[in-house]
Image 1 (tube, rainbow, N blue to C red):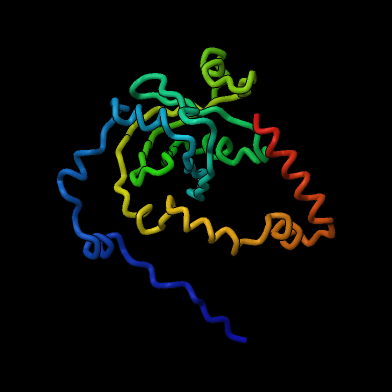
Image 2: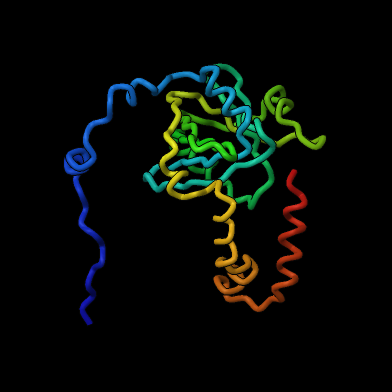
Length: 209
């Protein structure tokens, strides 16, 4: 049987530029090399971000990070710190940063259409003074991620407008997604009571810190 590839044609960088055109001068100028007052305020109100890293081969990973608004701390106008809260213990981001210290952050504030992008270099730390600033619910993280900022800029709200992310009506889409207990048992091919799995997951969620 002959296998037919379904991989779409690769478009060259030159073709991409020809299709999308050149950015306006103002768009290029908005990229800062530091955290200004407006960026600092946005970060202080953000309870959620996505963090992109890549390993030595370039294989990328993007993971969610969330906590109380302002969980990401601005140490100075060129340095951020993020707490490492309990999770699935995969530590993919830490493994990637050990091989390739480049990082990209996308900050969101509920109800705000624009996002804030921060790019730079990162490394883990256990510096007591940094961890103390991230203490929550009487507990402090074991590690924090320090981000040395190279680029900071606000991203227009077109994507969030198109997605209707903050529209309450969009939450109806959640009814179309099966419970995670069904997904896990199907993917792993395990025979377990879904109710028991849900209970285990909920217990884990209650131990956020």
